[in-house]
Length: 123
Image (cartoon, rainbow, N blue to C red; front, side):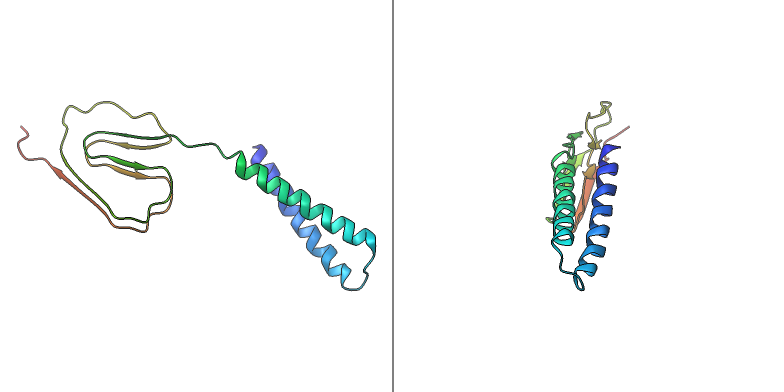
């Protein structure tokens, strides 16, 4: 919740500094310059805090041929596996790929993703 509050304050600071910058076109007083500079610094510090405090995501993959990527993926992902009928465990992570040939990506994917799970030989 605090990240949303910090982002809202940074947004308000940016909006107010934009108004002050418009006022500075007509009046170049030291007070307007000081207020604008202070708001810009406050907004930058808040954005930095929100970015640095972003929680680290846990990435987990379980199962034959499973792939989990914590961020963005631009390369092709190809996985081949024999289906694991006995696989019962659930991986512990924020981004999880569970099961034979499963793929989980915690960001954007611009590459091709191909999965081939061989199910032959099962009863």
